[in-house]
Length: 142
Length: 141
Image (cartoon, rainbow over all chains, first blue to last red; front, top):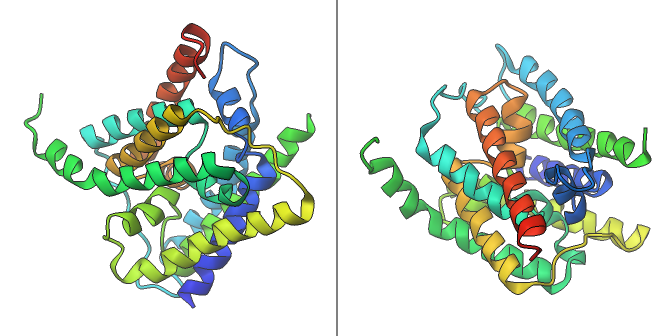
């Protein structure tokens, strides 16, 4: 059942990315490009997604997931260097190519060889990240 | 309101509904980088099967829709160095930060998570600076 739910969620997620135009790297770079021809579409996508999600979070209070043990624990209010450095590196890559992990997967079938090269490089980065993460966590605080 | 903005709102709502289903039924945060990354680095454990099912839907359904509805404009760069550098940065960065646009952005901001909000601030700032630098100053992308 959990696998079916996951498949349906992935399908809806992909459909949303396609309809919203977030598989178009020009739209993503257009949103980041405040000195160019700024494209606000991404803000509408974010807004549209956050509303149902906020309702879902409100619904989790005092309940249990239908096919799971418990809802995710509240996040720690702690940032840490992994979050700051990681998000900065992610943003640089996102700006360079106009792709983030969801759209990179959703557009795989119609993005040609370029899309495949990006996805393989991204998966390689994900595979290589854990040792770096441990090192950053262990390093003394500045 | 331009039609792209309306499509953005509708598509965004679908993304939010997908995240809501994943949370309310499976009890998990829908984060694309975590779902793929845990498979890439072998930490998915018992969730490997459902992660693969999620990715199967995420790849196959837009693919089928593109076949039905006609070609999709993606404007992806043909430059190999950009694709490889950007892919590595996105892969490493999202795993260090434990999330990307879907996990930190959509799921984190909607529960007012400080980590989600700050991650989003950092990747948007870094993305904006990168586009301005590489597009307008260096002119290479």
